[in-house]
Image (cartoon, rainbow, N blue to C red; front, top):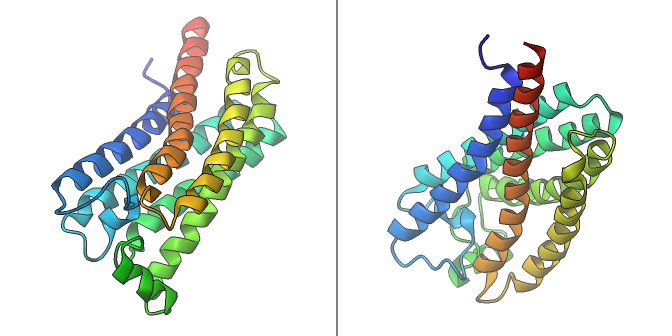
Length: 221
């Protein structure tokens, strides 16, 4: 018997955050005068980025992994809270792909670009990217809190209940910190810390999905 669909969906969910992290690491290292501490990740996919395709690929792969996790969890956990959480993840996954393709005109945290944003002199793609990013942040904070309820009702998933609650609450606190730091020299570091907490949760839950489904299937053989 071959590997089931849900196992592969879980593996894709693990691969997405890994690909995204590799993309911003490599993209930031090879782009001239890029400052990880100050500049945000989206700048690596901006219209003026030297190797934008690397970060665009990272966004799309992360989006695909998030959608895969949504589909896998929806088919594995038959609870209303799991369905709601899966919808949130689906929104986030589609949003990540959109954010990667609707690129910023420039690095928003650089003074010249920030002035263009304040003056409203940016393209519709830039505006779509920023607005979609906000939606992604909100739904990815909400999703772990919603799934915590579903995880608590299933013995196979209960170990992730507390972790999911902590992820959601910590994600909210880090979002506040990111907003506060947005005008400072630590914006890039604050953003990376914030999104990493959320994306690690996606990878952890994806890994759990693949293991739970594989275990159930092995017992059924």
